[in-house]
Structures are given as C-alpha cells and as structure tokens.
Length: 423
Image (cartoon, rainbow, N blue to C red):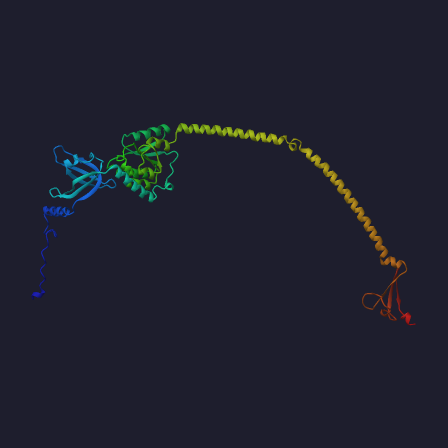
C-alpha cells in the first residue's frame, strides 16, 4: 500500500486530558492556587459566625457568614489584626474585611487572607436599613390593605423566640393568665447573631404550614441596633410577607422599630403587649358579657314599660274609651242625611211630575186630535200601491182619486169628482 493510504499519526494527549495521562494531585493544587492567586484583593462584608483565637498561635481562624443567605467563607488573619481591630470582634459582629483569596495546596482548602478589618458603624447600619425600608415600601410589603386580621380567639399560637428567654416567659405567662385554655407551638431559635435569620425563617415556614396554628408571634426583648439587626433582614421580611398565617411582631421595646414590624400584620410594642393583643382576657370578657346581659335586660324592661305606657295612652283616648259613641253620633247624622235626601228627592219628583203634566196639557192642546175635535179633518190620497199620502194640493187629487178623510171620531173614504173651482 502507498503511504497516502496510511492513517495520519495522532498527537499525544496533554497531561490531565485523559485517564492515561492524569495530573498528580500536587499539579492540580498548584494550578488552582495559581488561578486563585490572580484574583487579587477584595473587600467583603458579613457577620463573624465563628472565631478561634488560640493563645500561642499567630494566626486567627474565623468564619464570615452572609446574614441574608446560608453561605460562609473561611477567613484567616494575623493575631495582632484581631487584637487591634476598631471594635471588639465577637461572634455576630458585622464587619468589612479586605483580603486576598488563598488556596492552601497542602490541605486543598480555600480561605480569605485578611489584611484589614473595619467595623460597620451604627450610622451605616441605619442607612442600609433605611434603604431597604424604602425598597420594601416601594414593592408594597408595608401596604395596610395586605394586613391579615388577627383571630379573636386563636386555638394555637405559634411562638418564635429565644430559648428560656424573658420574651417567651412574658408571652406564655400573660396569655395563659388571660385565657387559660390557650395552646402554644414554640420554636426556639437564636434571636441575634449570624445564625438567627435562617433559623427564624425556617421556623416561620414550619409554623405557617401547620394548619392548627392560627397566629404566629415573633418575639424578642430589647437590644441595640446590632442586636436587632436580624429582624431588619430582607430575607426575614420577605418570609413574613409570604406567610398565609397572620404574623405578630413583638421585637424589642416601644422605641425599637425593626423592619419586620412594618411587614407583619400586627406590631406589638413588647412581648407582653403581643400576648394582650392576640388573646382576650377571660375575666374582662366575662365582665363584658355580664354587663351586656344586664344592659340588654334593662333595655328590654324599658321597652316593655314604654310600650305598656303607649298602650295605656291609646286605651285612654275617647275613640277607644267609648268606641260606640262615634257610631251613635254618625248614626244620627246618617238619619238626618237620609231624611234630607228623601225630602229633596220627593220635592224633585213632585216638581218634575208637575212639569210633565203641563207639557202633556200643552201637547194635547197642540196635537192633531184636538185640532180634529174642533172640526178639522186630515185628507189623504189612497193610491193603488203604496202608503197613503197627505193631500196638499188639488192637483194631487184628480177626478176619480180615492181619498181617506180622518175626523175626530174616525175616518171615511171618498172619491173625488174633480176640481170644484174649475166648475
């Protein structure tokens, strides 16, 4: 065969691109460390979740947590940097760090080597809370029309608070004192620090899914701005807004106003105030029922007395005191009216009878019978066919015409002989 038909030789694979030519672990670690080393320095903000300061160690190991998400970074820094920090660094402190990403090839771990630490001041925290407040307000999370009504008498109250805290004691004690039959579904979570927000959100979702829970109370005692910072977290505020169960915020004291107060369906000034506003006072309600029964009974008695007085007034009126007197009076009036009508009708009939008599006499005087009685006669021609006709002219009765002559006591027939004036 010719060399043209021979397959072209393939290039040998690069290291790490096939199972036959793998990279050793050290090569991969060195390459990853080189890539990460190219990232340079970066500023990062978060809360210190863990801090390990060994007395004889020059390096401090910390875990920096994102308060709005379940994410964290391992941080290393010189011991002197922690000791000379602008504020005392403890777990839960909000800080801003400048560091360089670093990959330790020996253990294959990633960390942030910090070279500068700055504390987040109260003014900056308040400014961030204000910006978040405006954002949530623009989205409508504070709209009063979205607030769900609190049930009058909840069967089970979901309570999210710190373990064995004064807030838990205040809510449960005051609520049980006011309504002994009240039940609680308590979820103990951290109420400050880096782990507070995710655990509170998880407890909130768990209680919201429980169909037996009628209202959820998020309670915590007072504290500084940093202590109450989790309750102004965007994740927690959105979780409260997404709940279908009414949520009561009882965080801090009266002057404190975290953002969860604005998102919740009801804001209570203190945990004690929350218990008073969601659970009715059994003694006060019983007193109210007793007072309402007394007032309703008194109102009913007053109504019966008023109606009895009205009936007595109606019965004392003349029309009811002697009901037949009105009939008697009207009966006499009816009799007088009937007499007057009868008299008027009789007079009218008499007058009309006289008028008819006069008219009859005049008619008899002017009628044909009276004229005939005075000697006149009515002459009619009697044709062979047809009805008799009044004779009005001699021309209508030529000789030989048959005539009918009516006189006062009857009628006679005659035959004409012609016109008498002609002879």
